[in-house]
Image (tube, rainbow, N blue to C red; front, top):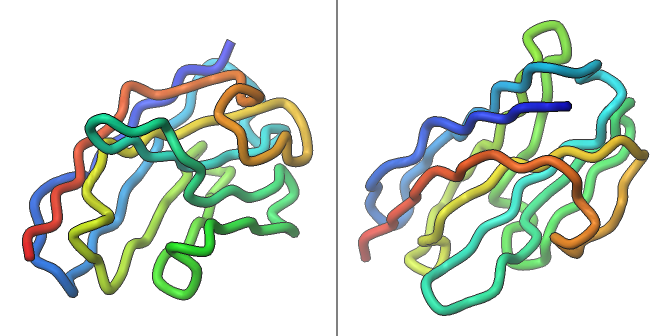
Length: 124
């Protein structure tokens, strides 16, 4: 059983940057694919970014490609999401997710473990 705890959310102006962190415990973290999703009010949870357990494959939503970067430090059991050039439409609760596979896909339904979420608000 993997537990995930996100941090780093907050209020930022459009064009600014934030780095989210996700600390994992309770499992062999290096064997899990990790990802970030987000959910805005009234909308479904959507895929943002993910990377394979090996760190060799990366996946991004078109809406964040070139602005967001996912990374992991297995020795620290931590996943990061560096968010640059933030826009008002990036405002959402951001969730960290993990799955015991290479990359389960972009649907939130196929990811196994979830954090509690961290709020990101971008003011225009």
